[in-house]
Length: 464
Image (cartoon, rainbow, N blue to C red; front, side, top):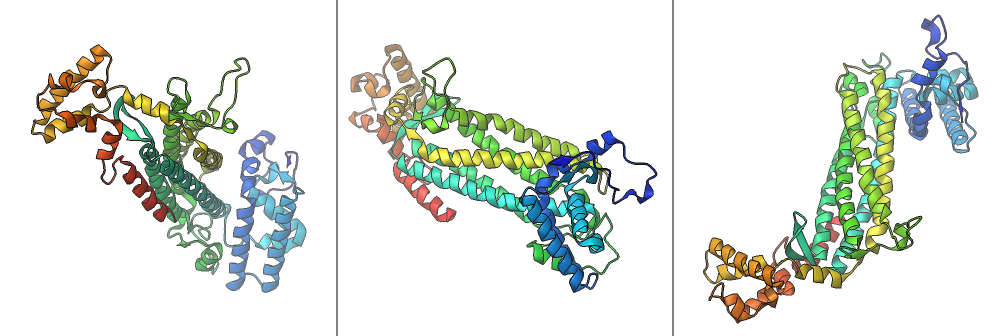
């Protein structure tokens, strides 16, 4: 609950001669959304107090009072017994005010040697680091599900497309592994981003550091950061780590959106390649036959939302002079929503993908259409000594004949095929079959079923 009528004195009010305008108070407050940082704010404050005691700024007794008080505040929040106040602006001042109410003047000593500027930068990094770890786990679960499905469908033949036109036959397992490779790169980007998130700005204070004898290495160690930041101005003013995370998120969501587009197409009556379990679909209010692939559609739609957040943060930062500016209050809502959206979409996909049912007969029948083995016939002629460009023309004429006759290359007689080249012999039908086509691409990265199974095995070993 938020109390917008509180008129308690501002912690910075000594310089001001009149109270903040009521509208301005609401307009500038961030506690409505940054209260979700309470756990990380309190964790950072406990580490800060511990460090201050180790360097002699706080006594051992004061440290104990502060830590016990902070833990009690945290318990109040988690029990729903904490009254959030707009007049105290943000999560930091709300927590500190409650702490002071509990333990008295000692609570006012907690803010020694720091500012809300380095405090919020630290809180966001602690928050984002935790969320990255959760997202990495969900991403790994989705990748594992894709590998299981790819292995199960290693022999299932489907049409491969370019320009959404039938191109060459591939295996469904191979197609799924293309999705997997996108997610591998996404996971690498996420973990690389985490390295730059895991650097501690606390101790930079408002912008120039502090005159107190702090030891930032102690605080960094207590909070699990790799190291403290190097420059106080940069520490409090930049949000490139949040932008980098949102960039990762935009790429991940773009990949999930592409998966979604294919799933939506494949569940349609026109393709009918797969079935999604009912629990991942919804129906129509007036058309009783409908089964709508709402999960993929929503993921596809939410991609625009995440892309927008990335642009929002880039635009937020592009004109800011050093150091901290109030503009940076606007970093949290896009970041928070990006985290929530990515986690939700990954959970939905990690649950749904292993349950996808391939309609192998429909896929195979679709692969038979569109002359998908035309390239195989051209390769056959090349292997018999025909220059590729000549082979291309020969096969093009054979395809034109097939279009006119409504017959696939594999349905033509040997005599009909020999009208286009007398080099063609009985063994041509070995390469015109769908199975022969996919089996022939038996090399690293190829679509042959054995290569799909080998790729799955390698990926599982890397996934751990």
